[in-house]
Every structure is written in structure tokens, then in C-alpha cells.
Image (tube, rainbow, N blue to C red; front, side, top):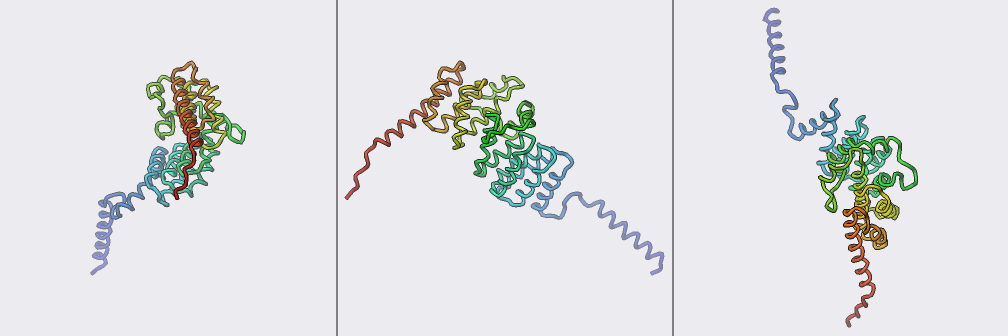
Length: 290
């Protein structure tokens, strides 16, 4: 074969190779669906769009117990956008690996309150009670150690748009209770942070720390928002501690009927618990059968 023929053959071969590459489907063709799926999530988390990164980070929570998903979510905790960090934090709670608790606790110093609350909620999902500290701080304005919230965090609590986005997109915001539903929430002033405080109060119902019980009593008696007072009374009822009865009794005469109803339910529940405990204490021991 002469030099011209060889040269022509090389051009033909090159043309065919380039043509095949151009005609090949773009993406991850040839890979298994599972590998393609991981590649899609990798691409989403590496996207220049923070919205795509946040969406990809949030779905990692569907991969319960998956170590790779946990690794990806932890990495996303350092994203520059709070939306992504909050989504990653929320996912770690759903993934369910307790090893992520250390990383979630680090997020308590984040400047964005949504990231902090998402981290707190996930810690509670992982069985870590330190998550209650965040809800306590939001309800009372200070931490259990007596230090106040950061200025940035306080400012975030007063941002209704931020709270609304966090509460309803991430599912950590206002929770309807005792007949207080969505219609009531829509009637609130745009600058009102009562729903997020109410949600924090309800969450503290399961916190065994006596400081949280005190915070709930204070909220039921002193908070200016009836929604927060009602939420605190709901939490008091759920705690099931008859020692908190006095706070519920005081609220039976609250000016707002919704608060009265919550107080009444709390009084009845705590009274029943106290009576049952009393009956058990008075019950004579069974004689041992011979």
C-alpha cells in the first residue's frame, strides 16, 4: 500500500472514530443503572446551581443506612449555601447512622438557624438528646448553659420568609395542634415567629431535662402569643408530669379559648396520671401463692 493510500486510510479511520463518538449517546451509557444513579447524585451535588445541590442532598435521606450516602451528606454540610447544608443535615437523620452525630453537633455554630434546626432534628432522630438544646434555645432565647443566641441566629428567627421556607419545605416548622390549623397560621402577621416557637415547645415535650419543663411552664404563663402558650400546654400535657399541674390550672382562665382548651386537656391528662399513680401506690401487694 502506497503512502497516499495509508494516509487516506488513517483519515478514514479517524473520521469513523470521531463520528462514532459524536453519535454515541451522551451521559453514562454502558454503565449499570445503579452506577448511573450514583453518578447522577454526584453530578447534582457538584452542580453550580445551589438548588440542584440542595435537592440532591435531600434525597440522600432515602438511602437508609448507606455509608456512601452518609459520606456525601457529611461533605455537603460544608457547602457555601445554607439550603444545601440544611438538606444535608436533614438527610443524615433519615440515613440513621449514629456516627454522623459528631458532624451534626458541629453545625450548632452555623450562622443559619435553618441549618441548626435541621441538625437538631436529625440528632433527635439518631437518639442524641443534645438536639433538644436547640429547641430550648429558640423557645427561651438562651442556651441551657445560660449563654444567648448569636445575633445572626436571632436575626434569622425574625425572617418570616426564611422560617416559612424552612418550616414547610423541610417539615420542621409549625405543626397544627389542638384545633389550630393552616387557616389560623395564614392569619398570623407576616412578622410573627410564633409558629416556629410553638414547634419548638412541642418538640420539648419529649425532653426529660427539668430545664425544658421549666421553660414550658414559663412559656405557658408569660408568652405574648396565644399560639405559643397553647403549644406549651400541649407539651406539658404530653410530658405527663403531674408536678406541672399548677401551670395548666393557671391557664384555665386564659383570655384565649384555644389556650383554655389546651389547659383543660392538660389538667385532665395530668390528673388521670396522678390518680392512677395513687391507686397503684394504695393497692395491696398480692399474697404469694403456696
